[in-house]
Image (tube, rainbow, N blue to C red; front, side, top):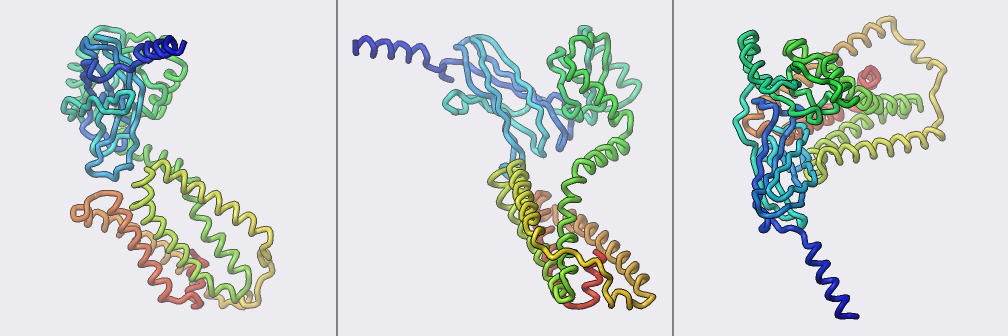
Length: 399
């Protein structure tokens, strides 16, 4: 019985043996579908096609890997999709990614994780704009190309969706296109999610409808809406803590300057840690999640401490009632001056980044270093002014 069991196990092992790369004759191609000259920061589809040329069926994984010659190793994520190609067949997979400055390349790996084929994007994309085509007519892109270029005189690439299944299910994936051309197409073949993506894309408009300036403003407004909640929440923490310290009594006002300095020092440490350590080790997504977890922990701690806090003083102080008539005007001047200084500070930060970019390289490292040094300068000036100075207290309260 033992010999029989061993023989059955051996036969099963042979039958279940994965196809090795040496058994298959594999070639792979990758193309950037929109064929644009500049896709950095845009959702960009990469079409990866694997050909098996008569050796044996192949099962493995296709990886889309960022080219990181000008960015940190984990600045952009890698993408993976399982693939099974029949003997003598081919299979295509589309990856929608936010493109980096150097684009992506494709890798084909066998079940053991060994890379058996690599490919860089083929072709030489160079068009400034791209239009997608939905049509059931044969050779629709050739029929549309000549009149479109004659009327618009645009340097345009035309990209046809091969079937309804190729059309994305979210409008964000179409953000790299300037427009869509629908010509004798059966929209009933689209799913509900695809129809909604089409409606959203048309409703938001594009650079063809809004113009380059209008499309840029729209993207800026949408980005501002997405960032408004987290930035306002983080920006409100220091004023809330300063208010609690000031309401605790006159003696505790002396610590406001040190509190501001400690907050700025924490910003310096966070900038350096995220730029040079965390993004390198974890990537952008994991770093964002880690920062969110830390913020939630700080919020819960503040909530717990607030239960034993003495609370705000609602009665007006004698010195507040004895203010000179001109003090309100002086405070308005200080608020205006603070606004101008903040505007100039951030303008100069951008100027420094542009000036040092050719020397240090226009990367996140350069920006993080400039931001850290600028914040260190704020700390140095803050401590020179002195936390116990009355003018300093009025300036912090105005901020």
